[in-house]
Image (cartoon, rainbow, N blue to C red; front, top):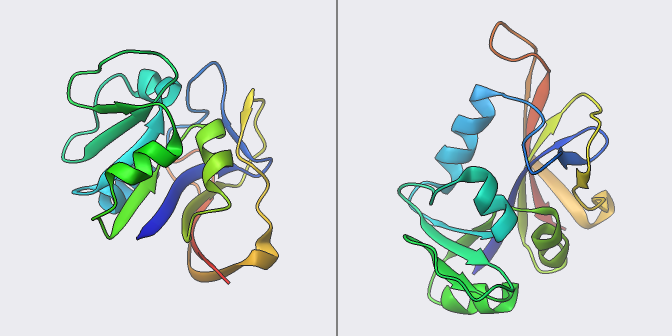
Length: 160
């Protein structure tokens, strides 16, 4: 099984503030949707709360220590439990937040990384990437335009 992280980070590894995204990049949102559509997404409860509903056309697994149910989602209490639910799948997508990313970094095989070429004030950060452990297999650079206030790059990393 491929365990794949999908994340957009700022140049200073920032990913959020006050449980919200720091930027609005329509092409990145489409990129995320294209990658994960039809698949299984695994996220923490705070990330789910910031999204506000299950992501459509995807199996949604939420990790939380709380004893809760969430309509349209499967709820587990650990990353290991989430991955165990997916044992027959070819690929699962880890989509946040910071703590879930931190736990998944040592077991993931691939990272679909969007780097927003700007440093942001944030309270939530992605773990530092040890680039020597990864091989860049794809890269697509985008400049600012009328819908994108920041330049950004789509990068695919596979474990070396």
